[in-house]
Image 1 (spheres, rainbow, N blue to C red):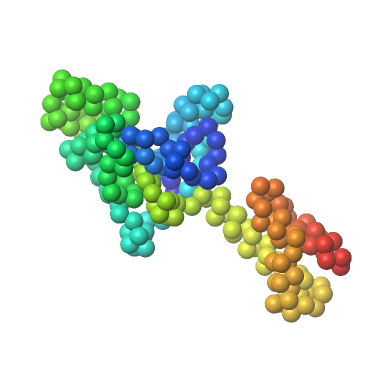
Image 2: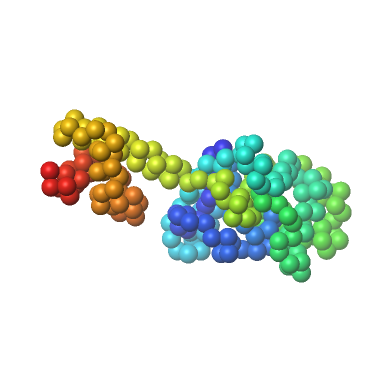
Length: 226
């Protein structure tokens, strides 16, 4: 599943210790399947930090392996179980984590819903009436990754593209070394992957991987003095 996170910066590394506590599903890294909602959040957070909002794309791998290593909770809709769970996590008098799940997925308690939760907790609206109101609320979605193990199921889209580019660049350069200099494929691969040029390529901060493979090949030839 392709998912999105809106912030004032592009997310390079996820640090759960920097995530705010006592949110809907507890402290964790939150994403959504709705890009529009992530864009709105990026604008809000961007204005707060006086920066342009940024949406980071991820791919969430929810499969049999994910379910075997993570305890996952799904809330299909706004209902009594969801409400009780959100109230539990938002209670600042309860130590975190307030639940045992690695990943929690379900609707969002946005500003309007949070306001009504306050009324419910204050006793000015019954749980039955509040849940009836929520039936007409627009569809929302969020997934909270609460543990380091859970984060293993989430990969940045551009990271996946980088790996794909590395692979294509490597294949082209190894093939070119074989053709131009008569190396066997294993020797050609060793010369490339153990080179300083490859080390620079693997350092994504300089974005060398965005260059044409022919440019990188020339850097390798210069290094090898060929």
